[in-house]
Length: 364
Image (tube, rainbow, N blue to C red):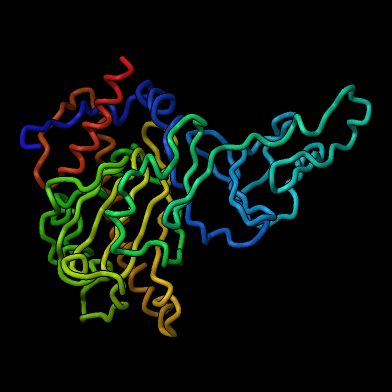
């Protein structure tokens, strides 16, 4: 990375390039859509979109999570909105009704339709798999399985015991910037002194590893620091216990990981947080931040009081990032913007841009 340059700024602002990303990256990648514990009961559902495609995530009668197209097989009416719980999925237009497994159950007014078979008109299903509590969706039925795609992700992240964590908050927000810009600012330390002098830099961060860990479809770097890194350090605030499975250097640092193309997470000494990323166009992104803590910490009587300190820090840092990213989006849209050089403090940015450039080269 010592000689690396950034990609042309236009890849963060150009409408045509965004359409290429939709067709070539998002149509066949694994996309995180939440945590398995967020829809715990039969019939729990969430309606959402990935690059403009309306979808439903629902917990079935067999307690399996499934993802369906959020369009009725009759005349493509959207079926569900927002989130909630249902026993069946009923179209609000003509009352075609589906089971939680996507099967078509009821079609009032279709008695005279010749050779009409319910089995031919179930909801269109997508591939859905989970790993370490994270739920992923893929449009491509021929893509490698999630575990195959992730490679040694499990080994690299084993010290933090993700499977022993619960999701405690899901905060949604939108940013007027390209999806890649948000991911990149999350994955580098270079901006910390300038953008986060109060919210983050009270924690003494050391530069992250220059080399990424792992051999799967992800980029991951680890950096040492004092304390949790997830709570403002003013007045020596008390923090939650360290994750019981952590030993050695893992107790005193954070691992930042980018699961390609658009999922990012951080694991630190007492918690983990991850972002669902939903591009809305070349210059707007919808995101959900999910906060996760060990089950033992969540069970503590003082957890709700203490976790509020974590949310305060995260919200403060996000507001600072959003302000700078929306200004950066104005810059990448300038016809005079040119590629720059990449610092050793943002090596993960270089790895991601190298991956993206290789995808472009493979399709041109």
